[in-house]
Image 1 (tube, one colour):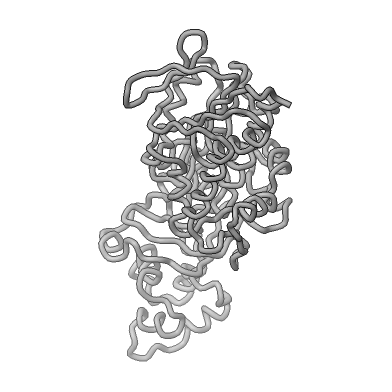
Image 2 (cartoon, rainbow, N blue to C red; image 1 turned 90 degrees about the vertical axis):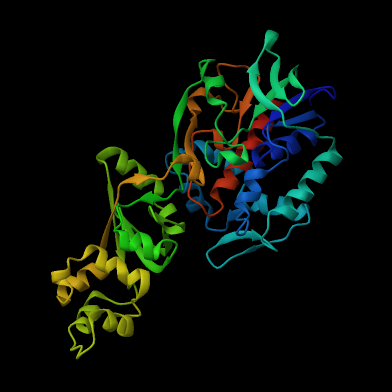
Length: 401
């Protein structure tokens, strides 16, 4: 057991930092939590704006696979704090959870604020001391931590440090990657940050830009790289965004980096077989226009129908075979990911090669890292938050050891 006088500083008051604090406090360690923002959990609250997706209920091995190349690296930490452990933890805070139709797990009431309020109250009751508006500047003389505050620069010391500073997406929440040059100067290997769970640019016509930006494209199947998923997304002035696009964002981003673009295919009528669709399109339309015919026979209208006219040459609009082919496999050429600051999350960060199994930096003894500042990525669906919790807890356990 650690000494009652042991003191740990946690920098970053997001989920990874807060769960690290709770883990340490429960073992009798004095904890001071520093954050540059005026309050805790800014990005956590933003994530819960449309409903806080805490974790996912799918079969565990499939859940682990969602972390791609880092699945095996993250598995020990996720094994120690599973999706069910996260639900049990929320229940202990008095927050019941439920499984939505897609398997995603949400708190009852959906919002993030009740959970965060209860959590902060628990941490303060356990003895956590918060220091807001304290921006970390690195290390000073004799390895003291430097912070910029409203009253000027201060220095402070502790027995260990846990960094939970986030990645580079949504910088207004405090996740601005200002820690990169500090750690890089100490020889820590950091892989470049990239946008993850992001939208992509498409060279739309002015018609799509002006008429359909913000319009949802519902119930389609997107195919790319040998994988297909059903879902929905949104047209933007610049291109496309939304959950179905985010599910493929890592592969799309990597393809664009490799060859300069990525082409996806959309099945606009997943409930119609190709044969049935061609048969319908081959029927006599009488005096009706093709647009009217598509609207009546297949409910294809508005933004979804205009995607067809965006890619199909006008001279082929009345060619049933060509039209059928486009409707079942409409190609869209993505030319660039949206900027990192717009993304939901980021890839890249502190390389796991720079860390030991306790998530301690090999180059800086006694300094641990957790959360999104580590080099892993995952799709939306509760995977992001779960890994932040799991690595935060693991970093705290590492500090205790």
